[in-house]
Length: 167
Length: 258
Image 1 (cartoon, helix red, strand yellow):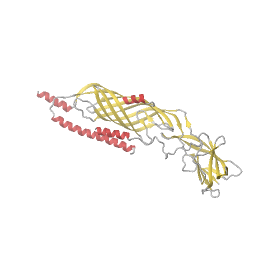
Image 2 (spheres, one colour):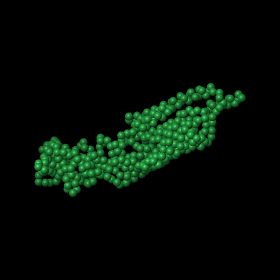
Image 3 (cartoon, helix red, strand yellow):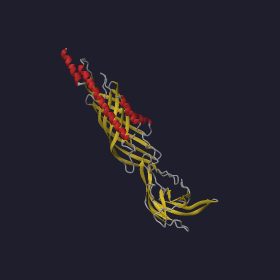
Image 4 (cartoon, chains in turn red, yellow):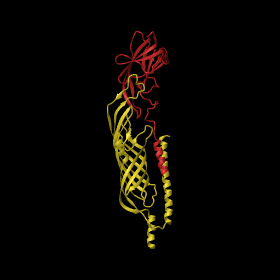
């Protein structure tokens, strides 16, 4: 009988679970995924040479995005600012720094959204889910982007494209 | 090991222990028939009241916990007891992203089965039992920080607005394994462990029950929970009864022979 009691105790104390740590595989707050497409062939993705993104805060200052590097690619993930109902980004094409002077063509995009906090788990707490309300490209003299459209308005994961930009 | 398989093992242990104990019963009965000794022991039957020492201890030493539990059992037969617990618990939980607290009262009722064959003159218990538990409680969310692995760009977002979720409830069943030893006349010290599983629960919207009074903490991946208590109890004897009917018969026969 004592052996059984011991066995039960053993089972109880091995019953610890790793759910006090938020797993990396858990989908928490997602970034906005923008994919670039060819304006001449709307269904085919088109690489942007030397693509680089900067965030623009409420005061108009440029903010570095963590993990953002200059690379040629057709897809970019951008973190939205949950403290505001819109975030602006400066997207460069052919970004380069020559003699401390930034070269390349920059266009500014504005994403407007509503934010809701959704419960995930005891370890991860809450995540933000953004519902995109509007997307616009600011006009300037030399636009490399031609058009943009919202494909999926709920930003819940990074495996799907939320906004398409044609160039 | 998945929690569900642990639970299955626990049930198997429970069944196994019953089988073992019934096998032992048979042995004792066979011996009893041959016995001609006229010494019989009157066992105490009555109502036992107890208090959980572990909850008092945790209340004193843990800053994020307070609670108490009283228990009672009534002996129905040689081995069967009806038993129940009544308690109140308050527990705060916090990590970097979420700070909550839950408080409420609970009630558990069920049966205990004594698996132990005492020596003559001793009344200790090794019990295996079943309970149904009901809890009524409220939970509050003190603050939360949005979990965002890319928050370095714009900064962390914290919500410190306290929200209270009331009228929450849960119902569960539990297997309870314990020992009770008579340390002084009618005074028992005991320890028990509980393995439980939730049947139903009312959770707050856009949140979940982190801690359920009486049930304990919850787990993301299963409905299983665990618990333990150290009890100090007092038996209020109501009547006495010979150990078993067979023993009593032997006794009568001996008297006639004299």
